[in-house]
Length: 225
Length: 293
Image (cartoon, rainbow over all chains, first blue to last red; front, side):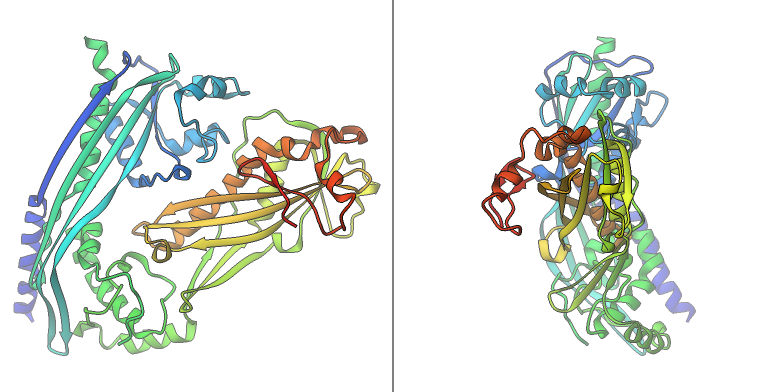
C-alpha cells in the first residue's frame, strides 16, 4: 500500500514542478491614436464587447485583466465591470452598449449618464474582444482500471491560441486612444505512464498578464513623456 | 458501459482547467463521476468539475470506489435523469431613464408566479429550468421604474374601476435554450420571447408587442447550471433594456395619459378589418413591423 502511495505521489510532485515548462510564445502590439495619461482619482473599466456581435471573451479573462491592472503600488483604479454596468443600466447591456466612439456623445447626453461616469471617475473604457481556442491536438491516451489498480498510458498534446484585442476609449475627449493586442500560443503535453503527467501551457493566463502589462504602460506612459 | 455523449475525450482539457493541484484533489471524484455518468442512461444532475472528463468512456472506475458505486448508482437511478436549474429572482438595477408620467395597471398571467420550462435535449438529457417568480419580479421592478404609478392587478380585478391610463398584460410566447453540446461552443444561450399587450382606459387593445431577448454565458468549472442561470438572467436584462429603449416608440403608451387617444395606434388600425385574433405585431429587435398573425 505504501509503495502504491509513493508511486502516485512522486509523479504528482514532478508534474506540479514541471507543469510550468510547457511551450508558450507571445506577441503584443499597440497602436496609439491619442495622448493618454491618468490622474489621481480617475479610473478605468474593463468591458467585453457584446456577444450580440459574436464576441466570446470569457468572464474570467476580464476579471484577470481587472486584477492585474489594479495590482501593485502603481496599479490603476479599476471599477469592476459588473458594478459599472449596473450603475449605468441599461446603457451598457450587450444590446445597448455603444459600438463606436461616435456614439459616446449621444450616450453621455442621456439622463444621469454623465453624472454616474463622473461619480465613478471613469476616464477610460477598455473594450476586450477575442477568446482562447484550442486550435490543434493529437496523440492518444487511454486509462483503465480493475480490481488490482489502474493507470493511464499514452501521449497527448494540444495547442491553444489566445488572441485578445483591447480598444481604449478616452472619455475625456470622447475618442479612441488606440488599441492593444496580445497573441499567445501555447502547446501542452501529457505523457502518461501509469499516472498522467500534464505539462500545461497557461496560454490564457499568459495572455492576461501580457495584455494587462501593456495596457498599463499604454495608459500611464504619456504622463512621463 | 454506455457511451452516450459525443463531446470527445477531453481528459487533457480538464487537467488544464483544474490544474495539477486540482487534478490531485479531484481525481477520485472525476473517476467516480465518470463511472456514474457512463453507467446511467443519461446525464446526472450535477456535472460539476468533472464534465470535460466524463464525456466518453475510456476511463474506468478505479478500485477504491468500487464499494461506493452500487449505492450511488442506485440513488442516481431513483432520482431520475436530467439537469435541474432553479433561478434566484433577478434584481433589475434602477435604470437611468425619464419616467413615463402615466398610471398603469399590470396584470400578469398565473404562470409568471411559477414558470418551469422542461425540455429533452437530444432525446436523452432532460432539463428542467425553474424560473420561479422571476418573470413577475422582472415586470414589477421594471415597470416600477418606468412608469409613475403601477398597480398590480389580480385576475379578478376590474381595471376599468381603477384610475388607470393603461393596462399592460405581459406573457411568455417562447422560452428556448441551447447547451454547449448543441451549439458546439462553451456557452449556454437562452432566448425568451415576451408579448406585451397594452390596453387603453376603455379596455381597447392599442398595442401588441413581441419582445425577443437573448442571453449567453460561458460555462465555468462550477458546471453548467450556473452558466444557464446566468444566461437566463442576462436574457431577462436584455428584455428589460429593450423595453426601456423602445416601449414608448412601439406602443405609444405615453399618449394614453389621462384617457387621451393614442397618437398612432397601428394595432387598432390593422384590427379594424381583421378578426380579433389577427393583430399586427412589431418586431422588437429591428423596430420593424411584420404581419405575423
